[in-house]
Image 1 (cartoon, rainbow, N blue to C red):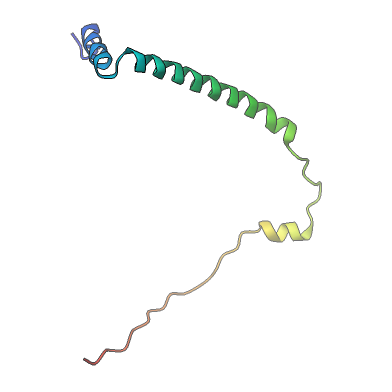
Image 2: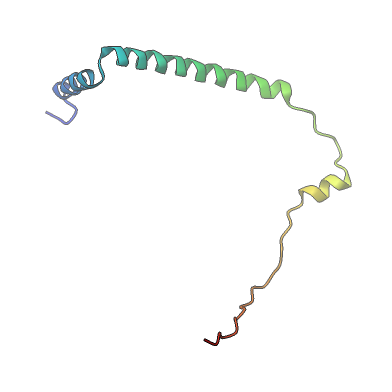
Length: 88
């Protein structure tokens, strides 16, 4: 007898049916099925669209395009600023 014995699954199934009811479980199952169908449909259409909708890249980039895509770094040094002592 393991932790996933068939008797354990039967008890879990009975508890779930008692808690949620058969009508709600039926609706949940149909909603899950529709969600999976929609996901598969979206995945199939996404695979087809990029091949059709990809624009052609220019053969030679312009000088302004090179400037926009170069990574830029900022060289700075942190300095500690001390506040003057307050007189109470």
